[in-house]
Image (cartoon, rainbow, N blue to C red; front, side, top):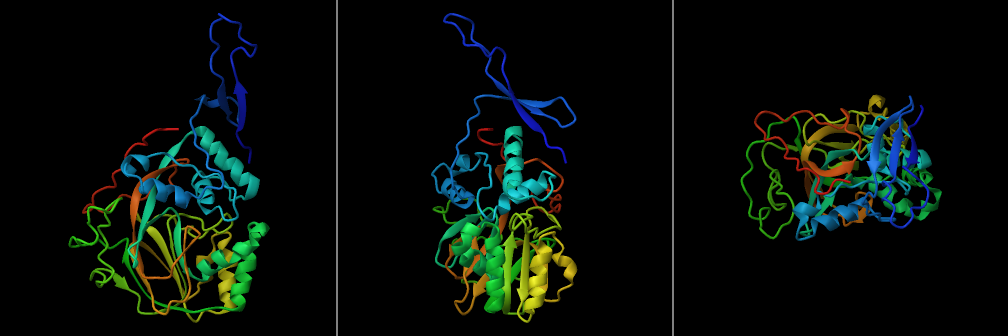
Length: 364
C-alpha cells in the first residue's frame, strides 16, 4: 500500500539580507500517494517530547496536578519505541492501516502526528483496596497475561519476541489464580447508584466514579457476579490491541464508554491456551470456540484476589495484587489519531447522558 510522503517547502531558501522583507515560514506539505498536497502544516509546531516516557505515567502525572481539568486536555501522542507498543498499534488500527511493527508502525504514527488529527479516547479509573487511585489508558491484567508481561522484562533486549518467550515459559508452569470477579454489562441500563461519601470525597481529583461503591460494600444488585473463582487470566482492555502483534479486541466497541473484559476459567489446557495466543495475532482467537474463554463488554468491574497470588499489570506497569475496581470514562482524553468509524462508539441509551467531550486545551 502506497504511503503518503513528506516534503519541506519554503518560499525563498537563500539567506535574507539585513533589512530585506522577512521570508515566509517553511511549511511541511503532506503529499497524497495519488499526487497533490493533502494539507499544509505551519511551523513551528509546539510539541513536548518525552524520550522513553510511558503514557501511563504521563496521564497520571497530569491528573495529579492542581489544574488537572485543564492539563488533561493537552493532546497526547504515542510514538512506539518499546517492545509492546499496544496503544500505538491501536491508533494505527483506528487509522485504517494494516497491522505492522517496528519502523513501519513508527512511520505510521509519525505520519498521524504530522497530519495533526485528534480523536477523543476513554480513560479507565481504578481504585485499589489500599486507597490508591490510578488512571489507565490501555489495560489492567491479572494472572497469566500480567505474569508474562512483568516476568519477560528480563528478555527486553529481544524486543517483541520477549512475549513469545515469556508465554512459553509460563505455559510450562501454568498457574491458577483464585479470586472473585464482578462486572456491570455495557448493554444493561444501570440503575441510579446511591451516592457514596467514600467515592465522592472532595479531596479526590479526577472524574467521579458514578458506577462504583466502596470496596468494603457488595457490588450493586444490577451487576453480574461470576460464579467461578478459579481463573487463568482476567483482562480489562480499553483498545483493540494488547501488543503490536496482539489484536485482542477485533470486535470493536459495542456501547458508549465500554471496555473489553476477557477472562479464562481454570481447566483450559496448555495446548488450547497456546492456540488462543497464536490466533490473537490476527484477531481470530474468538473463533477458536474455547469454552473457557469468556468475553463481555462492560462499563465497570471489580476483581478481588483471594490468595494473594499473581500480580496486576496496569498499562504494563507492576501493581500490588489487591482488591481493585474500575470504570470507564468515555472520551476523556485527546490523542493524535485518525477519527474513524472503528474508534467511534455507538450512541448511549436514551436514559444516559452523552459523554461530555471538551475541546483540546492547546491543539498541536
